[in-house]
Structures are given as structure tokens and as C-alpha cells.
Image (cartoon, rainbow, N blue to C red; front, side, top):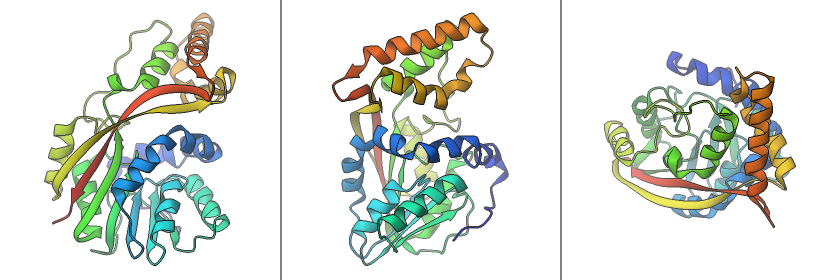
Length: 283
């Protein structure tokens, strides 16, 4: 179920990143990214409450950990993961085959405009995959159209940047003394659905009802030790060093190393984080 996706023009920049170098890095380090947020997985799966006969749509599925978890629960149903990244979907398919999950399928598509079969899913889920739409109302309206009447939407999104220690620590260190500002509210990115009122407004405008937000806080894992976490973090966020001279780069890396060392524990490098689990219903 792979084809060149029809991407909404407003999402072209996101598609270029996720179906390019950024997506390739995530695919290469799939285990690390999954482990980073794994503490949230039990809460997320409990909220999704997938039954044996459910048909599940996983938006922004990445390398498919949540799709595979849904497929195991929907043993008589189906789990379909959707993502923009061909590299991540290749890894997702490989893992589903290795785990013997024929009811896990993967589609490269832009969920904002993809022609999903109407009213064909019981539940749509997303673990940190819905914050990047340029037009979230259109995207959620499209996702809602894929749900049967009474179908459920369950998503995990980040709370505000100020509530996420990992984000503040990494961006602060790599700024090397330069002023830092969080992303503007509503702009596609990790924190675009951080404000509860905006979430309610967006989902309400997209036709969902019964919107509920449940807060969760967990420690995120970034590596076995500071050196391991440094390699991973610089591979992910090294672009934040752009514009720095040699001295500035050295200061940024030193500052990153210092915060990572300060967060070493007996179980790796860990930082506090905060999310919302968002539930809503298609009437």
C-alpha cells in the first residue's frame, strides 16, 4: 500500500523534511525514538482502548510502534499506519513482518487530504504525530470523515514548551548565549496543540465533540550516558548550531554536554516532559 502521496501544498515543507533527511534519521534511530517516549505508551494504549474487532487508523505513525501495538489488540480487525516518510514506513513494514502482524498495514500519505475510505475506522490514534498540519481543522475534518459515527479520536500531544524540560535544556544549550524564543502559538511544530483551548477549538471546528484533555508527565530517555545522548541529540538538533562561529559551536556543545551529564541516572540520561492525552468523538 505504498505510492507517491498527494501532499497538500500547505504541508509541502513538512513533507520535504519528513520524507527526506529528518525522516531518514528517525528511521535509522527508531529504537531510540520509541524508547524516549515509551513511558507514555501504557497511558496512550489505555486511552485508545482498542478492541479485538476494531479498525484503527494511526496518524503520523513513524516506524510503527503504536500501529503494531494496535494491531496486536485488534487481532480480528486492522491497524493502518499513515505517515509522510517513506523511510520510516519501510522500517515499520519490516518490523510488522518480523513480529508476524499481517493486520498491520502502512500507507504513505498526507492525512490532511488523503482520500480515506469514508466511515471505515472505529478509532483514530496518534502519538505525537498530529502537531505538524498547516491546516489542522482541515486535517482533523478529513480524519473524522474516515471514522464511523461514534468513532473515537485519541492523540498524545506535547504540553507547552515551558513544561518540557528536555526542550528547554537542549535549545538553551545549543543557543550558546543567543536569545531563544519558543515557536509561535499555532505554527506547525511540536507545540502547536499545546494549548487546551486551541485543541478544543480546532477539534470542534473539525466536527468532533466531547473533547477531553488529560495531563501526563513522564521522564524521557535520551541515551545510556551523556556521551551516547550527545551523539544522538546533535544528530537530531545539530541544525541549531547554524550561524555560530567555531567558538560558539564549542560553547554550545560544552553546554549540551554539561546538561546531559547533569541528567545522567542509573537508567540513562533522563529529562522531565509533559503531554496531553486528547480524546474526542465523531458524532
